Image 1: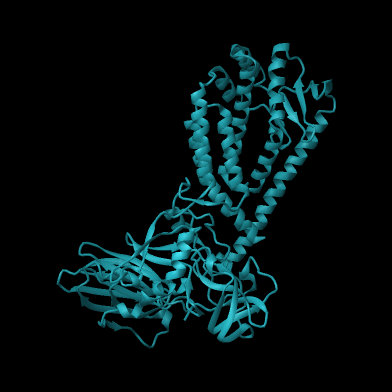
Image 2 (image 1 turned 60 degrees about the horizontal axis):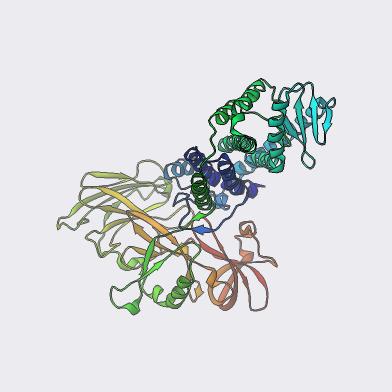
Length: 600
């Protein structure tokens, strides 16, 4: 249940972008036929119902938007993170998430999600029950309706016309309409039926019921209903004559006092939004052909742009020793990957790995003065660090002071020449190093070590450029570096397999650590040699939610020594591209999940 709820939440977040853009585009198409705006809402429906799409560099979604902003394994993360693409929103929401306590038997975030899932289901049930009751009440009110012809009925207790029914829809009219009014209204209602609007309205209501918690979906439902009516009115004016605008508007005005008793029914909808409709009718002019053509083409481009997920247009340089010193190969990296990328990376895999070295090779030979009270437990210690080193390359030593406090408590900071930056660590050990992340610039950085919440050690890098002090990023303790700002992180590389492979390359760009996705499909179906200790859970099926089958105990722990395994599938954590769980076939034919502890 929780997994389904997270999937719906992710679709709802992505669709929220699309709704806002469609509302904006709708205003731009003010002079275009309303049927074009009406058609654009199908893109919103797609985003609200389909959890996947294809990637394109021409996507209109924000470039950093993730289609899975809430990862399915968030309840298993030590520090839960949300990636909606809006940095401020992500920071606030991620900070407010419940962090699991070490040793706790139940993750509070998991309880929160499961509770939310049940509330979500109750909301759906409530809306469906309300709709069903509305239908029963309506059918009772229509018992006295008189058949006029075919599927047309008149009822004395009605003030406004509407269509009722799904398979065999019926048109219900108020008693007392004059001949002209009746012709307009019947053409309007028949247009609804011919366009299958009664079915579309029902499906839209069901989508609304699924995403009832999202206010933007309610707005989309209301505005879509308006566009449905406006486009239908325009069809009536086009079919009959623009000269009927005034009498048609008058007939709408006479029906404006109608009692809308059908709002809760997905298979009956009245002709509401009278004010909008009257204005649209009175202002209607048959659009020129070129206006319609340009509007259609514009809407098609917008629709395709909203249907696709953003691809990464950035270029990265992969160091290749065959190119000579300082040589590089520019490769365009996209989420889906390209045939050229797969071939080049596969051919150069060994050279890529050889171009990177352990992070220790870039640590300078310098030792800070560190003091602390050794009688205290680690989570009560306060480390005081002092030293001097030329960080910005101006030839003068810079004064470096830091205070590190464990357990994410406030008060940790680093100070260089009087400039201070606040820090936050879970398990600092007092280790601080001087490291050169990029030999091409004049800077050297301070690297402060944190042993992590569950033995996931990492370095946080701080740079001083002479005018400001700031954190550059955080990378795990055992990352590989090329000395020019690029990394293959331990959490993104599988060094227990031979040959080695990885899911992403890391790079510092604009003072930010960026992970560039790498196509891992090329690794599936191949045989690899495994050396080391890993966990193995026998499974005859490849599980979609592999987290549920992972058991971290001694019974599943196995020692692999030059063991040949066939790699059937790779399970990648959507939030950090971690490669630590694989569906494999062992030499004896046994299949199951193979995974490794990625801490220390």
